[in-house]
Image 1 (cartoon, rainbow, N blue to C red):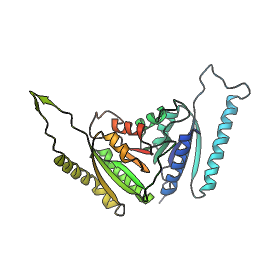
Image 2 (image 1 turned 120 degrees about the vertical axis):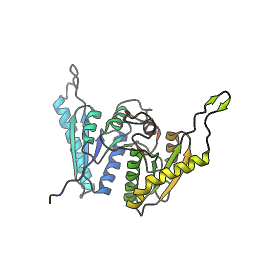
Image 3 (image 1 turned 90 degrees about the vertical axis):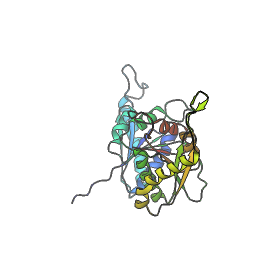
Image 4 (image 1 turned 180 degrees about the vertical axis):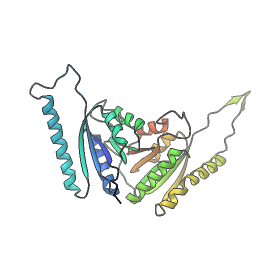
Length: 291
């Protein structure tokens, strides 16, 4: 029987601080899961009418990029002799190339912001587009992360009973098992919008009833992961408030924050929900968006 090659961990690299942090994260992920590492650098096509400096031709510039990428790749091979590493330089738009690569990836990793854009923006356009349109799980890594001060590392996963949050739970427990980490399973109930007619409130909000319902929903969602990962310890955290804000606060000292691409609320046609997008913009730790 022929052995199948595991899907690679794909890393989008451009030399920026964010992509260097993402490369470290992706390399560690590939080592933990015995998966190949594929480094993808994208060279944007030079528009007609533009040219490089007179002393450097377009062909020479591309050869320089290839040599630099080869040196980077060889350095990782030397550090991790058992790791299968390959790299490719693609001429395309960065988002388009990484979305294509995501079809064959175990996970696609990239920095929160690359070389372009405004320095005070946490999430760059490429990271946003790939997170929205990727075929699979995307991990966005900030250039600077919060310090991990806990004795046991923690992974935070947002759960709301949706199909993608169930997949997020599986991803979180697999990550926790490989890292010997604890999982914080966070469910956030939004504050109800008040509605009134004739001076009387139309909604009756009982926090105890809501908490019991959410606890039951989360317990049902966790059943499979508890069976598949019996050694992974976890805590159930029920919160009330704005879901994205609560998840960011819960993940303040986490190694990783994991969310589904779209929750049970919102429009079915949206590829990425508002909570996931908001978390990507504001979290200070790596964020995984699971499909």
